[in-house]
Image (cartoon, rainbow, N blue to C red; front, side):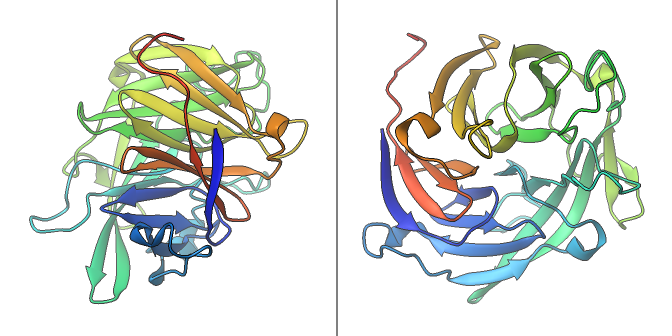
Length: 289
């Protein structure tokens, strides 16, 4: 089920578009890989590197990264890129709970650059019925992950609720770039309210959510850090409103922290924190689980 295919740099989540893998680090840095080199080189060399715009202001951890469906300008090569901020510094005045930054990615010759164009923010991260634990538990990861259903233009946000021992999934219409009001970052901020929630469901509790992707109508979420929170994959079907698959990497000897998941040519690619890149052969079809 798990086949090692290459080595890339260590890091967090990433996103794939037009054969390019964008692998992000914990401070906004990005390495770009040409996936056409898979099968040729055991260790892939980045074709370019860049740092996310304004990363010095809020240090985006890029725990979940996805491409959306809207383009900033006609003729752009890449759709907008979405990455959550995820500030785990408990002593910080602003932990950036429920925040997602939106970037325009441009390729200029052999180099890439990014421009921050919007910030999305969950406006109810203190709500004990929708976001934080109902018993007031200090949730270890209150930031939330984000994935996008490009076909239906939906944004899914999901968050671990430690006290309730569930992970809550919320669906919204994906805000467009013309939505929002100016914020301190110099771009518009679209704030999502409880009234914007168009669907909500709970799934089994995820242990330390990491990278995420949306593919074929399903949400792929990887999780885990070490033995007591082992690296694993969960597949969530938002139509059925339930988890339909769970795979424990640790049980098969894959012990490194889970990070990246996305799809390339119909194949599911997964990478751990040190940069081991794998292809996953997922043993199911349809809803017969």
